[in-house]
Amino acid sequence: MPRRTPGQHFLLSAAARSLSLRDVMGLTEQEAAAAFRAIRWAASGGEPTCPECGCLGCYEYASRPIFKCKGCGRQFSLTSGTIFAGRKLSVRDHLLAIVLFVNAAKGISSLQLARDLGVQYKTAFVLTHKLREAMAAELKGLVLDGTVEVDGCHVGGHVRPENEKADRKDRRLAENTSGKRRCVVVLRQRGAPEGAAGSQGRTLPFALAGEAEGVALVRSRVAAGSVIHADEAASWDALHAHYEMKRINHQQAYSLDGACTNLAESFFSRLRRAEWGQHHRISALYLGRYAAEMAWREDHRRQSNGGQAKRLVGLALSQPMSVDWSGYWQRRRAAA
Ligand SMILES: [Zn+2]
Image (cartoon, rainbow, N blue to C red; front, side, top):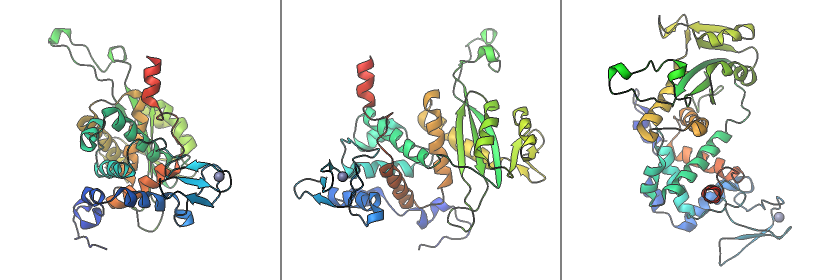
């Protein structure tokens, strides 16, 4: 295992780079497919399992990359029944997209990915959303415990100020907002860093209309007996009846008597950098998905990029075909 110099930033260490674009470009389609196969059917040592009946006995065609179940007779491919079902791109292109996606610490826009891969914007848009969906699957039903930080931040709904000062309005007032502003509430568990002994802290984000809705979420996603750190916002007062609370007034200090929400803030800073630097505008409709992506990046930031890519391939191949994203553009055309 490559060593890390003390004090060196993780991303600068050799341990952070275990898979490069050059590595993937050097693979043949068969080699990329073999890698997907080993990840998808890891439980059976890479032996294909029928997605229909779960049967292990399957024929492999010599002429095409297709399998046939000896039990139910269904024909299936490496990606049938997964989020990548019905794919037009090769397996190697998917692997390339995944490496580009995990390497982008602040996220990658669909336009940029489209240029990197030489595919249509629409293709890149659907592909990145499928990857976000796979990342979000890791957070489903997760309940946090121990010490948990909770905080909210507003995203989107920018109103451009009028040119002349006399025409400008107070954009902080509710009546002068665009109505598209959303709040992301994050619950972030403090814990041992990834790879270390002990529980690993996870990050759970939610896109809501307002911070006040966050109280019910905290009740359902943070175990009783946990200690919650929150700022001075009145919306969190209701939590005192259910948890041991530590409050920090950000007007006075960012950390006082052990109370702070700095972990939640670093999640927001990554989300903001993605919004400002990559996507420029995140629609309210997809905000929760972008937030889940950033939470995943935050939680796995100390894993090598090869480890992240493998984890993401595993998540994508264990998720069923996406209802939202399968045939997305075809449906849009039909509805127009
Ligand atoms: Zn079968």
